[in-house]
Image 1 (tube, rainbow, N blue to C red):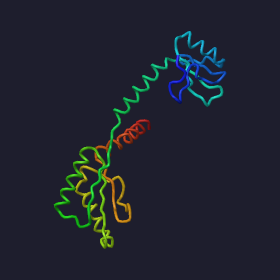
Image 2 (cartoon, rainbow, N blue to C red):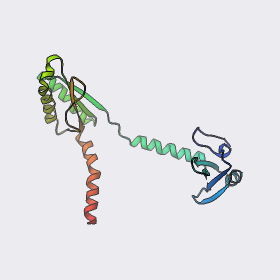
Image 3 (cartoon, helix red, strand yellow):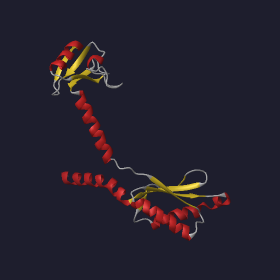
Image 4 (cartoon, one colour):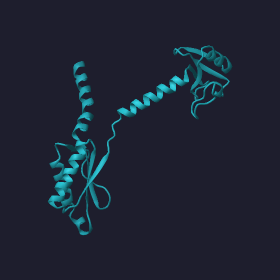
Amino acid sequence: MSIQKNNKTHLNEGIRAKEVRVIDDEGGQVGIMPLHDALELAKERVLDLVEVSKEANPPVCKIMDYGKFKYEQNKKAQEAKKKQVLIRVKEVKFRPNTDSHDYGFKLKNAISFLKEGNKVKLTVTFKGRELAHTQLGINVILRVIEDIKEFGIPEFPIKPDVRRTFSTIIVPVKIKKQIEKPASKTTMIKSREA
C-alpha cells in the first residue's frame, strides 16, 4: 500500500498521529484508537485508512477505497467543468465623433457578441481637447445602449475608467433573465407559504 497519494492527503502508513478517531466505510463512528489498530481494521476490510481532518485532535480518519474515492472526485470535477458556462467580455471601442458607417459596423459586432452570450464592454476614448466635451462620448454610449436594448442590458451605469475613457458593460438579455429567475422562484415560494 502506498504512503501518500499527494501532498495533502495522508493515508495508511503515511498518517503520523499515534491515535486517530476512526469512521468506518459505512459512515459510522468507531471511536478513538491507536493508529496500528485502525490500520489493522482497514486491512481486514481490504480498504485504505485516509486522514480526513488533520487539524482535529486526534485526527479524523475514514476507512474507504481511496482509488474509488479519487475516481469519483475527478468525475464530479469533470461534470462540474462541463456544466460551467464560459462568459467572455468583448470590447467595442468608440470615439466621440465616430462616423455613421463605423458606428453601424461596431454596433453589428456588439450585437453579434451579445447573441453569442458574451458580455460587451462599450468604451469611448477621448484624445486631446475632446476631453473637454465628455458629454459627446457619453451620448455615444447611451445611443448604443438604446440601439441594442433588445439584445443586452447595462450591468452598471456609465463610469470613467482611466483618465481618458468612459465605459459600461452590457450583459446579454438571456443571461440577465437566468440571473433573475432564481429570485422569482423564491418569491413564489414565499407567497405560497403566506
